[in-house]
Length: 383
Ligand SMILES: Nc1ncnc2c1ncn2[C@@H]1O[C@H](COP(=O)(O)OP(=O)(O)OP(=O)(O)O)[C@@H](O)[C@H]1O
Ligand SMILES: [Mg+2]
Image (cartoon, rainbow, N blue to C red):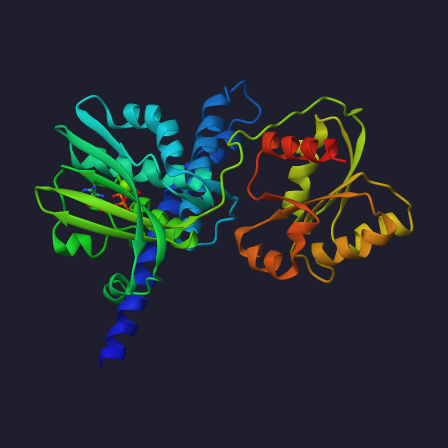
């Protein structure tokens, strides 16, 4: 009976997740389809298209945020791990946090100067702090205190015994405490579930803490919540400590404009809608492009027609010849060609299995023209 109960709870959780996704995407799609219809009906008049286009863009961007939060929860985000110090991150986000929580919340930091370093993805850790701070703000509409504290800790077997699946070792603790309305037991037991929210429809999606949870797990850490109704809440995050030191946080992006403006790019994409989109995207940019519908076409173009692209922008999963096979095949024919893989989150497993991160660069779908050209130009500058 216990097994049956667990099974039933699992199915219920999946149902809630599917329902949440469907509900949120339906809202966004209603906006997109509604405005597209308006645009189609007004094609030949002097109708001002800017508002519908802006609304469509906003809805699509919101959907993109939603997918990235869901990916965080499913621990499927592409990671860019670096050696980081949480104190530095907190100091750098302090300004944003102040603006976020407003003036009637007192913001106190107690940072241990000797705090150890961690290995994690900077933008994701920033995201974690911001999601937690937003919840703190919402829990104290009439003001209160937000206390952020950092410390080193060594966790022993005893601690591990009382905390499910905890490995003993050296950790840093980041704790975030508020003096807000707190939670009852029932609420607390559900906070990490995706789409669980006690906020009304327009104020909360219920994805903040589930993506925080996913990010912390993906960084080999743990998160615990302690809360008392009407008193306040503390979130404690444990992340494994490393002896490595951070390299300069500033990513130097020196992009000289040494492109001659007619670089030949071969695009390999099996989805015809996307091929059309790429054609349009590249029309106004200074590249020469050839588009192939699959790996075989791409090989024909190179081997028989003798085209010599400097860069290949290719999908990973395609029927017959995958992007990975294509690239492996080309290593002897075009040893110097630069490769940029377009991937969906579901491709990350394949990428790891094939260790292709060593030979190529990546851009995650969906991307915009700016991201794409920045990535392409970065690659073209590299020797
Ligand atoms: N600091 C806190 N104090 C009191 N309750 C909290 C706190 N943090 C989270 N909660 C409770 O946990 C629920 C889930 O939080 P979560 O961040 O996942 O979603 P949300 O804030 O409701 O929506 P979203 O973050 O997607 O905008 C909240 O609705 C709230 O009931
Ligand atoms: Mg939230």
